[in-house]
Length: 312
Image 1: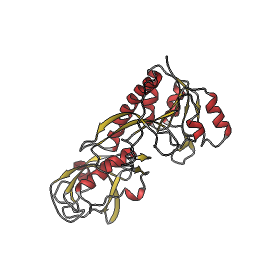
Image 2: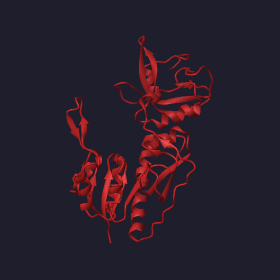
Image 3: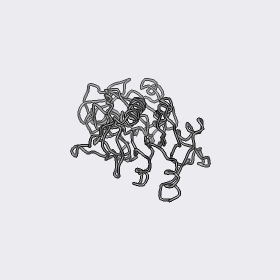
Image 4: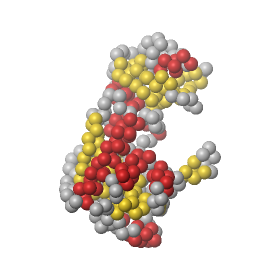
């Protein structure tokens, strides 16, 4: 017997779980997502979220409250008479009245191994911190930021080439499968809950623009993790003198390399091996403002960088 579900999510990451629940035969009573945002060059067009678009294509009712302070919004949620709410990257903290507004409560698919990396940017923070493993945890939501008991865990390795983009894609599929499994167990009355440990809590704060600049004085491992954790968006960057003017260059790919020198110094002709505070990194994919991503060799053909140049 299928469950009647309210789905709450916003970005493309969430769509995979929505579609997996539909495929599993559950009834999606409604979708809640962030309101349309200004888009286009002038910001005059309103862009519906990926979840909003996916729901409309399937004829599912969509609600876009700014928050749940309005009593009418809370009443409309309860009136759906859903068995459970499934939340994946919705983007709003839910009040207790919503958390308790379905028969079985609210379950969240969170992209980290809780209690490590609670909060807004767990995928990027895990890579930037040099973690070797992350995952998806399905948890029953309670008041507080990602503090509820855990129902199910799916682990994913973070390899030396993993970027935020590639990890995002792995986790969205793992998250969809985990949530379908969790909902099936919930439906069968066989979904045990385990309280999160009190030790090991870390918060994945939203990425600030001020921290995206590459600091080559750090170790090569730290620089490499920083670059991969911000690729492809928002992108780590350095400044390079081009025609006598500083120009910002994003780095979308990197790897550890051999070499030593001043922090930020380009070490070899025809390559972008750059010295760090300890060790060196090879910059493998770059993008100038307004340009397309280029492999390092192609970048250097258009923008030569001589050995001894110091990137900052």
